[in-house]
Length: 198
Ligand code: DC
Image (tube, rainbow, N blue to C red; front, side, top):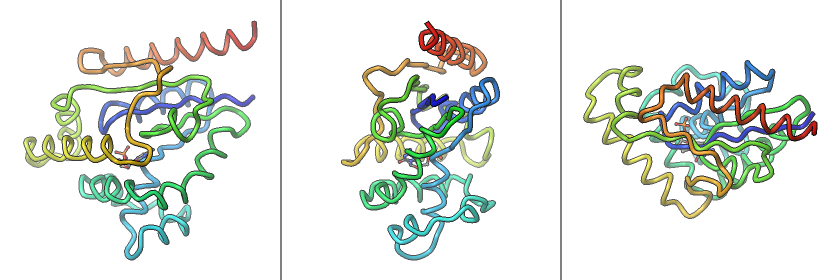
């Protein structure tokens, strides 16, 4: 079965948690596409060459989850040649046999516009910064400033900017718990699978 779940949204909205829960529930493969950009941003030298030569080992680095790695990822992600170098891998992953869930910024709009289910997960910058601060610690105001800076860069870039696909289901986790958002995501996927069988 080929079945793609595309999950997009800004930093720390809960995309990763929802994607992992969906992958577990349906036995789909999961790709955190932010990790690709984080790995490119963490490599020394020319980012375009880094993206073209990206290996599994690059994705296993232990320092990719930091705030600095997120900022570096967002900076290299504006470069069209970097995005182009990562496109085929993501598209092939999305349409693999057995089902796939990808989370990122442009999955439903650019990587896989034909995805069977598209979710756009968001929350207020304050709520997202608080969640990220609980994970990384430090100064919460600084975490909020970085979240806002990254949102702006990701949404304003010319190539594949962050925005919901027209047919995406919007999940705002400002008020909704992540558990409730997971339930809604699973219900939407079950409904779509049911349509396919009808
Ligand atoms: O999801 P994340 O926080 O790990 O993503 C890090 C950065 O990578 C994000 O600020 C922008 C970029 N990114 C992107 O441009 N497109 C994606 N599909 C995923 C991430």
